[in-house]
Length: 296
Image 1: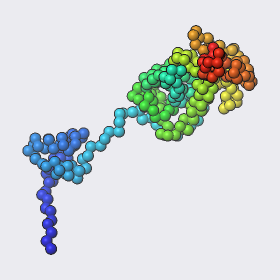
Image 2: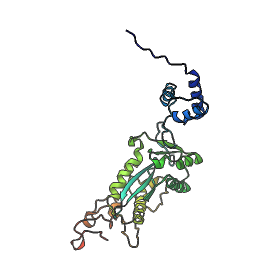
Image 3: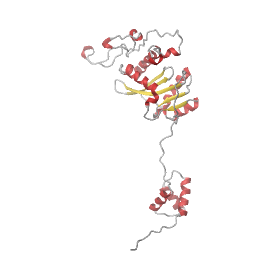
Image 4: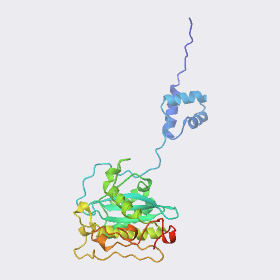
């Protein structure tokens, strides 16, 4: 029985030139390299060209997306002093007209202070950097910042900010929010005690309520990890006026206020059973006149 045995010519010279061209034009595929070979008088069938291209393992690798901030992935040690480490995360909510907005939460891991609650419909890397600079203007820059891997926090603006101010940026492992436990714990309290209690009529209203709630959290609310002390007591002198009632009045919007019983740690029921944010209520059925609506 006679079988045909293929005899291919020696393509060493062509393969060598193909390697050289691929080294000069690293992002060129086999079609563009074939055009360059044809200009030099080397005419190859596209099937043979691709076979030689693959034999030389010259396939162009796809880029992994835009360049992002890398940060560090070393284990973190507990923060032992104020301003040593900040934690960042985002929380989302909706206004009464169903428009979504996000809240940037910044936490001091040592004192548990809430350094910022920036609310907006869009929070880019540039906006995050502006919020951090505003905090640093009062407290100075931290040694380490911990965050997740969202696009806002892996942008070039964040990378440049960290390098410019000598701040080490630590990214937690993807899908491991427990590695950012301080701010995740705060997010749960923020949603339970504030976001779920208030129906925000506008972005201005949301910012006002968040500012009032942040002040109360830092200066009045007892924190279990601090032995019942408020986070602000670790940085403020004993004469700090933390006993003053929290009253924030806003024309044309709801008025958030904490009752004296809430400041004293008592379980007092306000109108319709409200206990934390007095005079600020969610949309409820059975409002005045039997119609659902906001109560002022």
